[in-house]
Image (cartoon, rainbow, N blue to C red; front, side):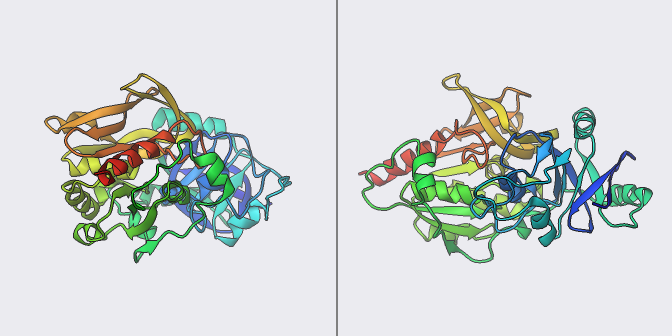
Length: 383
């Protein structure tokens, strides 16, 4: 493979072997500590505008398959790994990571010291970076590109990943994998089939699969879909999905969520959806030093003191101190840095979490949150 160059805005340059597409990209570089599930991670729309560095040193050995997509195509801007597997060995594999990234125009670099880069990111925080797999790449030029890039703060990244029109989810909730692995709690005997609206800020496929597997009719809405039109569906529940970027760059979404909160419809916010609820309540969000990205983040449920191992992917958090005077209760805290990981409203059937309970990839500890959501819906449907 040809030489590739990774350049950081702080003038650090790393040289390795290129793979994927022969091109260059500018992005925000984050590290992910998951041991498995790179296909789900690379197709997660929450990574839009970011390059992912895997701390797991050996990537690519299980190839790419047709089942583990969280979006129709990879969403990352670039990939950084210590070693790219030269062989694929998995019965589900339909191709290699190298070829797949190449078809989608995404560059990668291998053979770099990912441990050293991760130490730099933990010490100095998330950085802007540029990666080139082109033969005439210039390290000084790439450093300058990274420095001049505006970054993600304040940008609307959701507009690039959301639906354009409402769509009913007609996925694979009846898939044996879903039935056997996703449902920790059996669906109740519904008085009637519930309707759940999913606001698409970059929703992961497995999130919709979870909701459908509980027996609900699922309609996915664009991020800018007016609240009045959404409520005209007479939904039994509303899910506010995950998504990329800075919630401060989404004033239209905050306004819509604020109007949805005025209804009595049960609402469940996940990741970006959680942050939008916080801002709609008058709170503020702030950037973490290097974000939470991985499948091994410990979170404590403050109500029963149990610890959940969770999958996470976010750079921004809700500042609980800015919600003083609001009838809200913190329900979950990160055991790594003490940041807010979950909350619920005391006067409405609304709750949210910062982590990803759908576990794609990741641990299954938080699956019960979907049961909590549908318990609120069942209470609404039961006379």
